[in-house]
Length: 216
Image 1 (cartoon, rainbow, N blue to C red):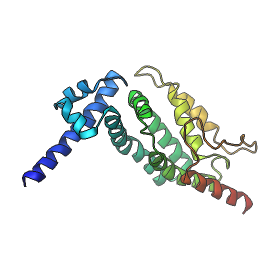
Image 2: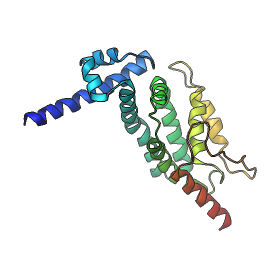
Image 3: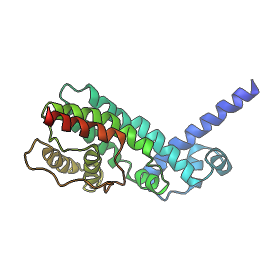
């Protein structure tokens, strides 16, 4: 019984530290010190190190929680849209909006190596399914790749202004307009994109389906 209580306390402390860190990063920037995170969580700095090892461990845990709660659900929800093109547009818009509020976390996560292949797959797999369906219906260009969707998110984030301004939505709309079917082919992709992601299994699926649709 005492051991179970100790384990429950440890889990609660970990959750408090992660959530305090997410808030601290949003309010204080990517360089917020661990001491400030510990203060906000109401724990000692030793507890932070004991639970996560180092700063990178805290950041990786933060990004995993943030991704699972605020990014992945939008990618999964796109599968339920009656119109897969609208599903993609809605998911990308919601993902850009949440990421725009957490740019410091994204910066810290990149530096901590939190953008893993597993995270990329959790983004690419559901959106890849929706993209394949949109291509099957002829709603988007046949040579569009999942990595192109990720690049659109990155490019749109580069246009995000001060809080309260939503001009980035204009640029996302322009990028989405470029996904409409076209007889003019895109330049061939490289093996890795500017987003730092290699071709994922989820990306290969819609590409193969698109080729099948063109030859069928």
